[in-house]
Amino acid sequence: MQKFSQEQLKDLEHIIKENEEQIKNSANSLSKLLEITGSVANKLDEIEDLIHQLAKLGRSETDQIKERIAELENNLLAEIEKLGVSEFDYTIPSERLLFYLKLDYFLRNAHSIFLEQNKIAHTLYRDILKKGHQATTEKKGLDYPLYELHKNNLMDRDDLKIFSYIRGVTNDIERFNWYAKELLMKNNKFVSKSDLLAKLKIHYSTWHAKYQIYKDDPNMCLIYVGPDQNAGFPKGIDGYIDDMISQLKREIKLDH
Image 1 (cartoon, one colour):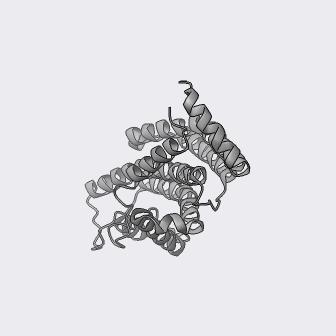
Image 2 (spheres, helix red, strand yellow; image 1 turned 90 degrees about the horizontal axis):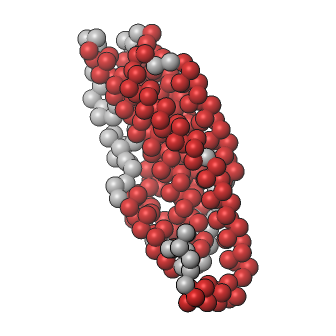
Image 3 (spheres, one colour; image 1 turned 180 degrees about the horizontal axis):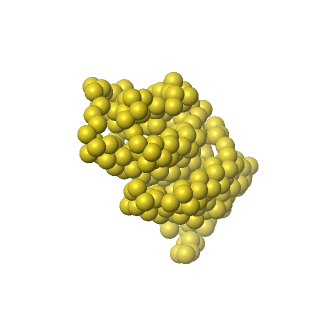
């Protein structure tokens, strides 16, 4: 790791003296955040690898892989609970950094799981179409055709197993999405400063409204809000968050 220069150390010492209590509290929070996120890194990597395997295996996927994914996801969600949802002080740079680090964590994990789930769902839909079944819905999102095919009993035993797995993943994604939504709801000052964060707040609020409507409906396995509700995941949000994190690291001299 590259060491700080003497000039950087003097600046850091001045900042600490001027804002000792605030920085101490924020540093403790940051340390906790980094400790928890680090402790689940291996779980996330293994989940991603196993989902890739599942997508490739298709019909020959094993129950053992699915059980391992479920176990890892449960452990991961237990770690996420430790992070909680906080209200951050917008006037303090280190607090703003904590906000964006936490938001980035929730978004990246939820989105990566969603993308893999989406691949499996499209494969399922193509396989059902190959059997000569069709969905008549005019809705654009994949969630509605799968809903119709399941409701009309047009899925065989193998299809139903994958359908059930996709539905389970949606319930797991809900926890990440809920945390991201609550983080935005509790930190409206951040949202008011960014059109992208405002769109992200609408996305997660709409997603959760739709989830609440369909969570007990056995025919729904996916929740999409982009194609039909016009509340999709905002383009450019990942880059915006990366830029804010880099900018704030430089501002409080945490870059290398």
